Amino acid sequence: MQNFDKDSVKHRGIYLLPNLFTTAGLFSGFYAVIASMNGLYESAAIAVFVAMLFDGLDGRIARMTNTQSQFGAEYDSMADMVSFGVAPALIVYNWGLAELGKLGWLAAFIYCAGAALRLARFNTQVGVADKRYFQGLASPAAAAVIAASIWLGSQNAIDGHNISWLVALITIMLGLLMVSNFRYLSFKDIDWRSRVNFLVILSLVGIFVFVSLEPALILCFIFYLYALSGPVMTIYGIRKLKISPNASIHKEDPTVERTVKTSSRLRMI
Image (cartoon, helix red, strand yellow):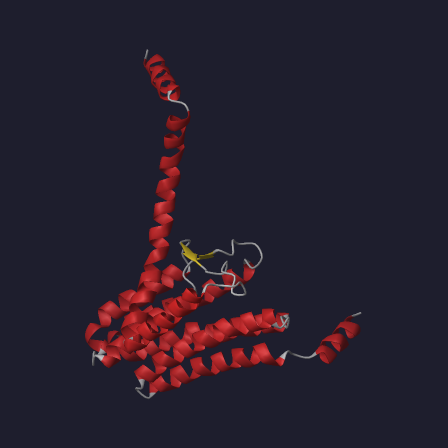
């Protein structure tokens, strides 16, 4: 039986198209590390966004062409660890954390470990968790926050070592957000195959034009806003759950409040 499984896997092979995009994303992440080692921080940051683009395409192409495989899923996870875990940690360390010594590389390690734990938890929750939300900040989004910050800083001639404490704080917070229980919108419930109005396409063109005006600044604002949306959404949801039962009871039956007050008086007597 084991020989039969090995032979079937051997003859079945590996799907080329989705894994080609995964390899391109892995190459972009590796190039980002090499670029940061040579002091090309802007190129390194852009390479991380290119890796995000390929990471978003490989899974969708696999589903559209019906070429999903266990190998592809594992390969994609390992490529994500390099592109969105190791690469951003090394880039931010070279850009603004090296001056802090042990604290600098520990901050980078916290981010890297957070990305690894985030990916491991995501893999164990596939098919179980609500697809509309992510539990914890997704590693590509966390990498985008670091990449956009470095990109914006490089364009404005900001030396990361001059703001090393702020860079360390942001890096540590991103690592903790990835392993947190905050809920983030996943946007996976959007039907990309559905028909849309012409105005929607026109709006998308306008968004691309708007982002192209100041890509570093706009992407930095968007991903910082997304990183903050998780705690805000979660705290607002908890407060809403605490308030809504009392509010609904009072709206449905106004005599309930009187009953509660009467019972409390009897207990006091």
